[in-house]
Image (cartoon, rainbow, N blue to C red; front, side, top):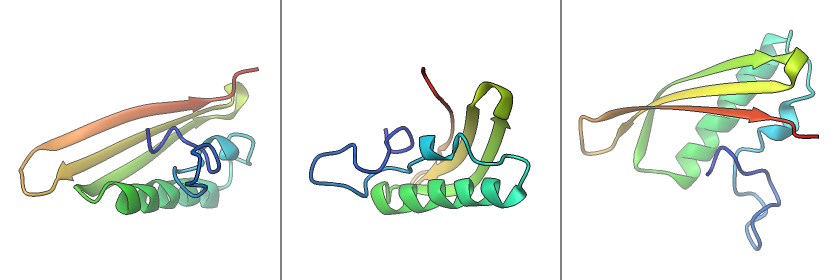
Amino acid sequence: TILQTNFGERPFQPNFGADLRSRLFENFTDEENAFLIEDAVTDALALYEPRAQIISVDVRDNPDRNYLGVRVEFKIVNTEEVVVLDTSISRIR
């Protein structure tokens, strides 16, 4: 839910979410954009899900289809359980 939510979608919580859909039309050939997406995911999860310790964030993109794939690997705090979350963001016309 955190990664799928854009800023301003939650009433009374305008900064909730990772705002990833706003990055779909950015220039994906620029490695800086992938870094900014990874940073947004890491910041949002650190702020809104303190029980998750981020291990890695991998960004996959397909600019021809306006698709953004994010793979997050994290460990649940106080356990040894490692979870891999795959999510995709795409524009719907």
